[in-house]
Amino acid sequence: MGKISPVVAKYIIHTDIFIEGVVDKPDVIGAVFGQTEGLLGSELELRELQRSGRIGRIEVKIETRSGKTRGEIIIPSSLDKAETAIIGASLETIQRIGPCDSKVNVKLIEDVRVSKRNQVIERAKELLRDLTSKVLPDSQDITDQVAQSVRMMEITEYGRERLASGPAIDESEEIIVVEGRADVLNLLKQGIKNAIALNGTSIPDTIKFLGKKKVLTLFVDGDRGGDLIIRGLVDAGVEIDYVAKAPDGKEVEEITKKEVHKALRSKVAIEQIKMEIAKIKDEDSNKSSNSSRFVPKRHEVSRISHTASQPSKQAVTSTSPVENKKFKELLDDLVGTRAAYFLDNNLNVLGKVPISELTITMKNIKAYAVVFDGFVDREIASNAEKSDIKYIIAMSSKVNPRETRINILTQKDLS
Image (cartoon, rainbow, N blue to C red; front, side):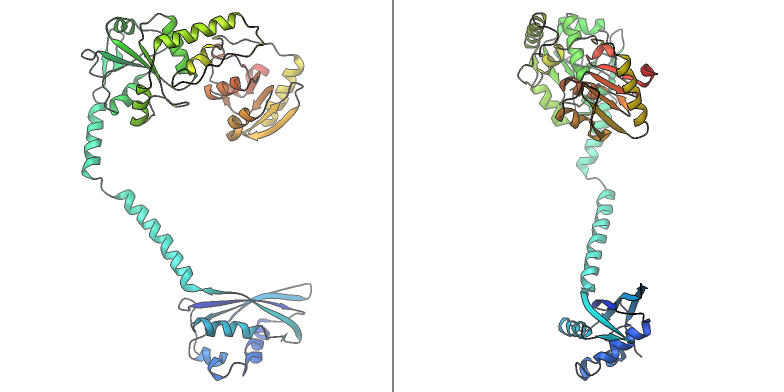
């Protein structure tokens, strides 16, 4: 008997069967051929269609449970759509298989060519991605790569402190002061050659000297550390003329060319920063410790006002033995879970969230304390301050207690 492989079939008929009893595969196949014989005429006789190779090998999958049999009949076809549909409909006339009553239902007629077409499309996408990733760069890309490498080779050292800088410090009337060497490298990559690094939190004499001769623009990260540098230089009396900040949460060393130029175009005169800091100091002196902090209107760099209103030294509040015990129990419970507990004033658990949702939950829930399986960084501390959270309890901390008003307790503190 001639057979047709499902690989060359155009359609596949998927049929569900339900039998009120126990039968074997030969009983099912016998019923398919026997009860459809003579039903559709000689041209659509299943046996003749198999001999001519237009119907493939009929597959039967059955299983018996609790005295009843369920399964599936799969018939590949190279007939046209109408003929295949007629063959499928004829199967539903089968009412008995072996000695048992049965019910047959055509579940699906699958167009094999559609499946193959989808497979071709997905494979073509993969091949195109590989081709795109391995394509040779055009002449402009090569030029940019060479120019970038040359710029990054131009980093030099300036002054007796050997501060990392671009090559154009002496000949430039305007100097950009950044935090570290990586910031200078990024600005060189973007074609800015008049940047110089502070190389730490202390104020180098070279920067003070340049402030008397040049127009200085302080360009800092868009986080609390950047705000502290602004405050430090202002308090030290360095003659800074302008202040620019990277976008929120980003560092100067990682921002793009567009972000660099946008931040520098949005620089603010130092007089405005000084006025805002002075205003906040005046207001803080007239407010009790429980009053709300002043938050000025947002400006490209006026976020310094929000930071300046926070004390530079942590306002340490001692915890009670009950709080210590509760914090330790919850922290021990979280070990290895990468999760966080939010607590209210009575130390009741408000909720438990994964670490990945810690920041957004801080913004949406009013909590007294947060206990989590991880370490405290500047971003977490800053968000906790904005949400008026009193305590953060974590495995460890990378934040200097003097740089935040949040009470930070670690596993070591509670042991």
